[in-house]
Image 1 (tube, rainbow, N blue to C red):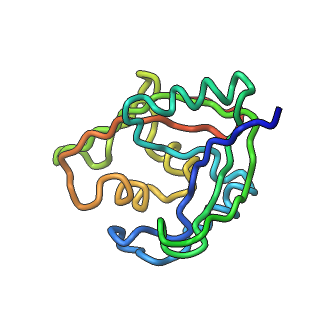
Image 2: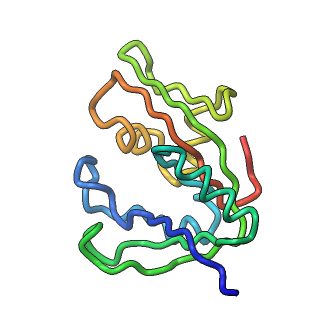
Length: 151
């Protein structure tokens, strides 16, 4: 029986809400050279917990893709297939009193410098990607690991 796929799409360029809008993220290259070892996603209704279980059990695999043009208005190109992934829960908080957002992964405080680097972004780009110009935010989601690395 052929395994089903779980699709995860990476942005080829920075989103329109980012100051680097339209510039290349180089995520495909960073994924291949292992300088991007995870992605962070919102986890509405714990959808990624279910997908993770399906992948770990061997029922499905992760198909990592990139938009060929404008997101949601262009074809997707598969750039990797992963039979195994890791999953950790992340909470990021950012208040006007913080120089940088604070990050907890599986309830353990982790350096934003390490998380941003492993996500393939500079700290500044990471903060803008997740928080934009707002300094009063909480982000809850998951870290989807492409390697055996865990925080």
